[in-house]
Length: 226
Image (cartoon, rainbow, N blue to C red):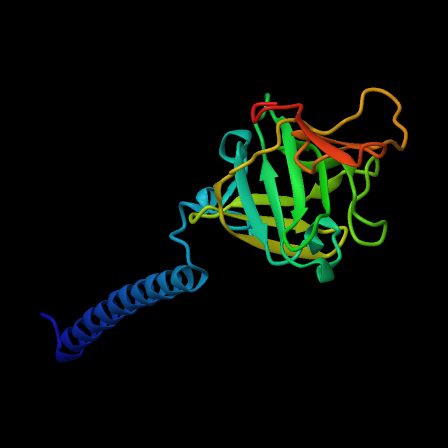
């Protein structure tokens, strides 16, 4: 026959087992809550790490030949292209691309200075082949290309350019279709000399001065398609 002490001991053991099971359950619940809180704090769900953009990735998509063709972008200054900020706003205009290369033109909006050359995308580079910026004011023909480490379009169509060598970053106004895109890269195929003939900044017209007759003729040498 079971004594009072035996019955009491069994009851006490049963209580202890229930307390242990309850303690383990509470511990598991607390562990789940801590893990869930940690995932919320770091902003992930534990399964999509590979789908997230790496830290420091700029917004927008990389500029391509297709979305730069015959487009114009205006920047408050041209510092990102190595142009003196005192020159004022600068317009960057692209022509038709063949593959990943096409003509571009940098023009100081408030003046008569410009640089024309060949643009390459992926990565973005601007190689100036002809221009009239003063040596201390802007890019020179034949110099090393202007390398843009970041060249992206945001959702509004603005062009974001970063030139780490110069420590400059700039975002243009919203893009617009170019009214007069460059038809060529402005490269001279033969040696040149100072004459009374000059090309306009868009390489479209030749201006011929006749000093003897005191007259000037303007001749179209390219159409808009180059």
